[in-house]
Length: 116
Image (cartoon, rainbow, N blue to C red):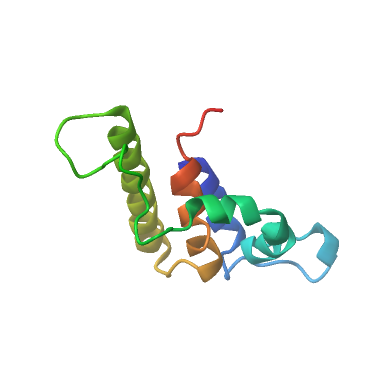
């Protein structure tokens, strides 16, 4: 998850200078451009990560209970990774994250530990 977020953030830096001699076709695409291209094909991913019926977890995968389950550890790791990334990028670049990257955070968190 962290590698994907870092890579995406570098493409959206507004201060990247491109020489006027470089054609538009050789310039890096922004995350917003990529989301626009793929958004129509990501409907199933968005539906899976969207909160349904006021709760994002089923009764069998309770995250606030006691004990340490693999699901709980994976969820905590994904949340810590997303928060750490957001904090460090904002702190190091002295800019806020573009909305196009924030739009991807639910997808990255949801699929961060998907090994299938």
